[in-house]
Length: 453
Ligand code: PMP
Image (cartoon, rainbow, N blue to C red; front, top):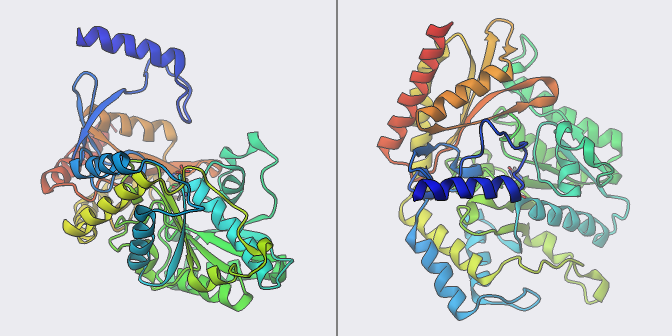
């Protein structure tokens, strides 16, 4: 009976559900996921997979956490919904806790997705500049290869042409600079100098655009979706200094790097930088309910506290900061703290990295890079020339992992023909056995590919 249900469900899926990104593939229909527990998911037929991508970089505390379900349920019974022109305790407490996690005074605006959190940040940055008399500042500088979301502004900030060209015109006023890609830096240049050069290039771009026209810079601490690019250690601090020199706000997109993923509470804390605005989503609720946040430094917020009506932020979000989602997020933060999952992330990240290092000798492995419990392996067809491995071969390796019960991801720089970076972001709550399974499975796939030649 279960099998007949599965067939019926698959037919209904094909008939009615529009899936993200990929066309429907008759030969390889989408996996219908039925349940999750810890780091593992299971499909309708009971096949189990270690989810080394945490869904879409979301499920930091792992699947199946009763306490998160209970927190949302209890809150819904008391007050399921009220908009935030007014207030309620879950939103107040969560905003307070986020300030603690950010280790400074921030004021928080809630939305439902990472894209909306970034849109909100752009609006706040532009209006802030007007409030302080900088009426000509509207441009936002972001980086090639970065992903910031699917809406017209967040997509304009995104530096991946393949996602954009069908949907123009996008929001105007977005300018792109190159991100540091240390593996492919100019030959003979040391990494620290390369980081300085990339930061200088950003500052030069601000100058050429006319600093008086630039409102903000947005970047992730490391580029995740565009090929796991970990910058040289000084880069983000140099960007912060350049922003300060030119009166430009620094927005840090922590949608993936936040909530312990980086081995610290937030990714930017690894670089000792204070952003003016921090955007977060995914790990804020570990993906259990939609919720995102735009945290703004108090000094920026205060520019909006004029007495005139027109000086307030003209922005509302119906579902943003719903009581249930906020209550769940609070339970999620509590769980991250109680189980010390930020520290666990750092430890697991180090072990994952150490376990992968022996693959450096593998003929297809060009580079291994990591940031907390985020790891990328750049695959090449020729180690000397650093020629990217063709995407068909990358996809085959991913399918081989899946066949052995391991889900991993892939990204890169599609426009330049580099779709060759394997990505790993398992839940921070993964067990030692989960990590051992991940490493053993992935290595067996890589070694099998070697003997196939
Ligand atoms: N910023 C980053 C860095 C992201 O990875 C994503 C989503 N992958 C977003 C923003 C957009 O988030 P959402 O899909 O929730 O709108």
